[in-house]
Amino acid sequence: MNILQKSKNNQRRIGLTGGIASGKTTITNYIRKRKNIPILDADDLSRELIKPNTYGYKKILDYFGNKIIDNKNNSEKAINRKLLRNIIFKHSESKEWIEKLLHPLIKEKMIKECSQYKNNQTVVLVIPLLFEAKFEDICTEIWLVKCSKELQKKRLISRDKVCEKEAYESINQQLSFEEKRKFADVILDNSDDQNKWIKTIRELL
Image 1 (tube, rainbow, N blue to C red):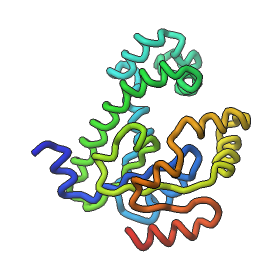
Image 2 (tube, rainbow, N blue to C red):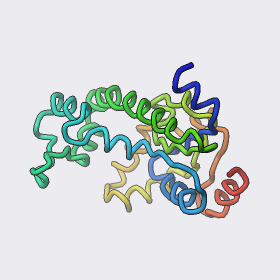
Image 3 (cartoon, helix red, strand yellow):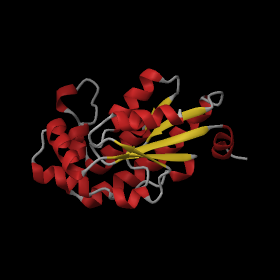
């Protein structure tokens, strides 16, 4: 029996996902503050996997060159993540390449970290691209954050300081809520009244 099978047999592993700016962080912070449950965030793991001198870092530099280095932080020669996001947003070929590189690495690291919490009955896995990256197989259930596109757009413009066109393009690059809900076990409505999803979480955790 491999590490993935062992982990799934002994843990409730909740995959928390949702569209960009749907409110995943707000819900994650609520769980973190009020429940004694380990939370593994795919975005945090991604940052670790591209730190200087890691395998991911070296592969990205080989592909994009030194232009991807953060010039404001020359001592560490760290990757400029904002610049990297902008590049892959505009170039589908680069986006596909980096997803093929990082998604398997993130999944492997997440599985290993789950095993480190083998004594915890429940672990929350925050995975923004859960369906797009095909992470369903490492979850025992999937919680999907619901939010209207209009509210997503407003939050994204406010958070990332982007124009309306860029906000809509970012939202539309991901699978729609309608597609995702077909495979979700729980819907957390974060459209207006947070008491809705708070009540659901209290019932389920």
